[in-house]
Length: 109
Image 1: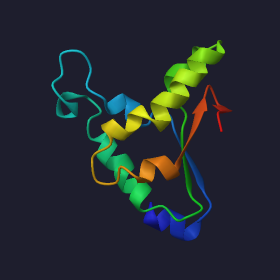
Image 2 (image 1 turned 120 degrees about the vertical axis):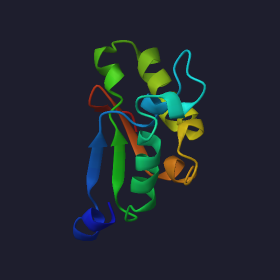
Image 3 (image 1 turned 120 degrees about the horizontal axis):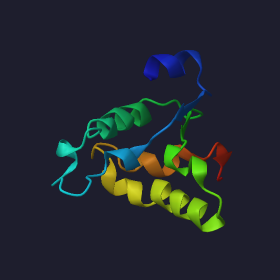
């Protein structure tokens, strides 16, 4: 990400799934048992290497079928509030300042 941001400091990177895919599912004791558990560490690394103008957008792919406002509001809260507990642990404060959120390709900011 540092190399990308060096060439394109104001780039916007869209990820189809953010931290929410790394949370432990039923029967998993923690994210080490999750199929996407390492994704949190990868995202932490991306966030820590971003230029100040770089944006990471969590597209929250599960929301593509949403139709009601409360569904989008819940997705927004998941991305901006709950995701703090699903980071890899190295840069939890970066998530509050860097990621934007989009649901069904509709920006929620």
